[in-house]
Image (cartoon, rainbow, N blue to C red):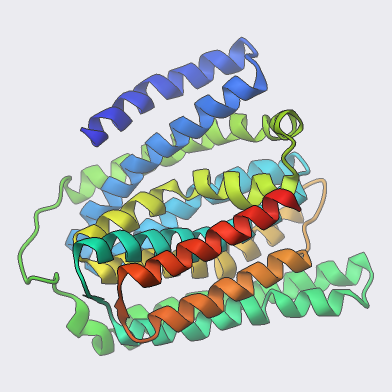
Length: 352
């Protein structure tokens, strides 16, 4: 039933976006149409990556889900960079980190925990990801902010480019470590929880085709969405920071949101955790650095320097996530704790 609704929204929303753009409908109307359409398209991406996860295993499936889910975020951010909305881009990166760790992780733990009293996932993955989370957010994001205080804009940008290259290399090395050289260490987690053989909804070829078409559709709709930010912000009294941290992050990461929660409710916590934390790592260690490098070819370059509230929020989210996930088990109360933290930060960014 839900899939049918999303299908209708996609086939209505995409043509409606074209019409609204050509007829110059109001920014509020365009914002609503584009946001709903992107979320509906993301459901297709989630279903396609779920099919690929069944064929490829939880680690590859989670990585694919995070990658195509973050493609939406990357596309929106590139158009925002082109429009000179540097603050929105940095805030959306912050929102992705908070959204994936606290909102997606929290909902997955909570809804999965309501259905299953005690859920388990790979403790090896949890500890491996903990170290990378500390590096990606606390080391690679906080240090540039501290050093930039005694640098001019040119040197800050040079530092950001250098750090971005290091982060991309380390992210790729991490994938090689996890999926190639040390794949056997995690092999015991590959079967589904009950050992059953599950049939994918779509074949591998069809799933990849849908992912490609969905990404192209999202690219078009995202460009129209970005042009509404300024007017919508003025209309509702939203700051660039709030739009980026909450609105863009939720819309841009809708694919991961739906997929991770669905996996948790099926007791496939390895996939759910891989989507939530893997997507966070990909945002911090790959998407953010790539955007810094892409911005060099834009009218305004973007240094990898966040505001103090953004840094404190991200560091807090990382430490809280590590503390509740390092034992390789989850329950509904831990999920509720993560969700409470997200709501507290959301109130802060709204009032800031």
